[in-house]
Length: 263
Length: 263
Image (cartoon, rainbow over all chains, first blue to last red; front, top):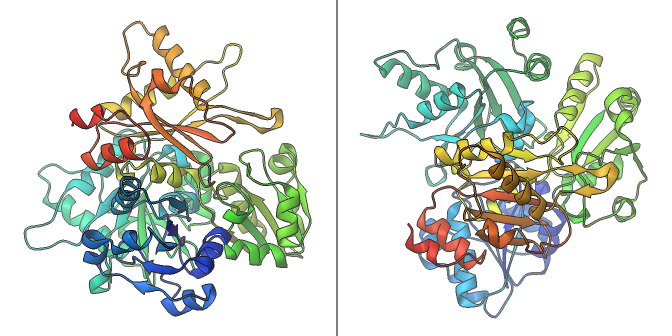
């Protein structure tokens, strides 16, 4: 039996009782922590909680070998990951492989940034458009697509959740500041001025699921130098606001009360 | 102190360890189960697990009175709900009220249909457009907006998560079948033929988070009479498929292998 288990948002106590029960009882636990990981926790803390050892896999062990699936033919094997375990496409392929090889499987869901960030933003979940991700730029790699994705959503009065790149193998996690700088540098490079500039309302969100979660709304010029602390971060670019959303942004996320007058 | 606690997807064991710890220790627990509830569980099962009593609120006690916030001034009060606790806008207003009244608060997130349904569908999360909800039709109330929302997404090659109406006070939970019938009846009422018809590929998803979760893909004509069993249900209308998505739909969700040839 193969269990695909999501540990949820931030630390080991974000896992569900179902996840805990499963991990206490399986024969072997592997971890995939390069597409997401728990920042408020450590392998040791998780191991102590579940009373079972964890073997952390490197990328090619997950993507090319998947030996854990072969072991799941004759024993109970769990693969754990942060957030919801099926958000990364790689993981959905494991279920396909299980099905093809006749291995039973079960998915244990976890809380995910894809629902929790919109939730804690105070914006209405049904007004979010397509999600986008800002990558770490590289030589010859500085795509404008995240900027245009936000613009497209704004044109249709939809909010955008902007995820920020994770390069776990280099211990690099993009900050709200780096993400906003990326967007501003795209804006400067455009021939015609785009919809997202220093006066655009944005939200920076850090460490959702933790007690010191930060949710801060303001103009990009105000957030771009703000210290959001440790990872993980994400950005939300709100579209046209409903009064209830605006009140939340002012009261909970520290936005300038003048946004209430613009509604 | 006010705790807003999400119980997650399906039964009492979907709650996180954080939620359990909180609910074991607070002075008073209220439940709001009209915007969502746990189908695999009962108040009694939750009470037994947490060793604490729960008072279930009716709608106006939540929306108009919010006495639980006044109690939170001098004691530790939790409000529990299914899924993630901030997805319903009503709940974000409680945090605003707490902030205005100087009451400390903490949010404990839970697994949500908004991330778990896209996850278990095997479709890529970043290819989902705006979510829509099909309401129970009523006298003079049969909005076409859900149909058009799906069409808009399809035109932009985006998948759509379609939530189905909950009328908990009447114990009515819309099924995949009713949802698809709704869409087909809108299609028939249009002057020009729309993009969604009996041959459109759809997915019916039931009881995400439970062991007997159903994930089934097929033409609307094939799913419209299929028995998905008990609630909660939702629908996904996939847009253009990537080969990895199509393989999942065939292998895991029972779609006709001919969809692989169309890619």
